[in-house]
Length: 459
Figure 1 (tube, rainbow, N blue to C red):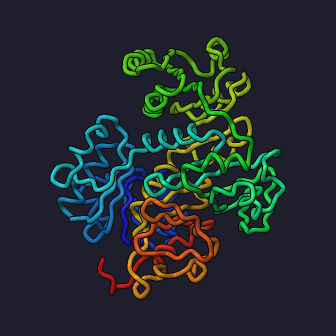
Figure 2: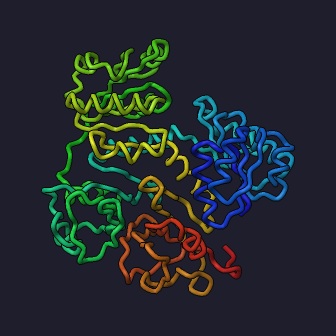
């Protein structure tokens, strides 16, 4: 595909890196010449210096025959205007914009239509991160939770701990432990390296285990790998921006929520708009404030300000003062691996959430969900199988007959409302939602081709 990316910041650069390796023709537009030069030194792509919403710059970038425009600058207005120009002047088929302002998102149904603001897919990073944190609150102890087929199936990452029922045992014993629940271990990471899960694989303490199951069975499977943590009741949020406020709104009716916001005006506004959340104006890394507000009784301390260092310091202090779990928002991808797993339990990146959402709209074949896992090293994909035995490489075939790329496993199949955990003799039927795990995302193109029916198929 010929793709124009507008914005060479962290999201634009990471996205370009993901797509260049998949034989796409990528052009990146940015107003910072030095950033573009560094990007071009690193990746095999074209760059155009200038304002990305200007018609002459888009034309220079090849908008006349581009398949897709992805606008991910820091300005909502520039992103929307670029989509408008691409639609009006160049008839670009697919236009994606990152939009962060709550005001635009509230009215997205009325605003983003072809005759008005022609954005085909809207990506709202703050909403994505808020939902991801909410899933971690719903499943205490999980490192990552992603949902498929409208929430029917979930892929969950957990750390296996000493004392877990399965630690020291082979994967084949999982069925004996929980005979009434079907699950599949999609991948195991041991000391940062992927291990192919076989029946004879013995789970060790500290292994990062990715398993897939029907969403209703997630907690049961988690209890096999680690001592099941009790539900989080008391939540403390540092930062009252879009993520902090959105999270408080989602949690306040079922949890006891306290929110600390540094800006007095913003704190007043949140106090008036949130129903049950107790809002404090202050510094989240203030030892005295945290002690006064009984941080030692908090089940989860979640730092989501715009400042990475402030989030890390506040979370470390909260953990040392007795908070059970510490979670932080990290803008810089390089920091995520550095901080996660020590005093900080979970670090999440809005960039990674944005990339996952963008990749969902870019993938060929009928791929409806893409999740970036392990900070972008692996991917989980939900693809719909189309065609029949003659026109498809997967329909009508048992999993053992499908030529999957190296390091790729089919974890589950969702058929109507039924979640079928994949075994070698599971047969794929037309319209099945097939959930795959890729240890190495460089094979994503092969997976796309696998799920593209031949030219003789008419859907």
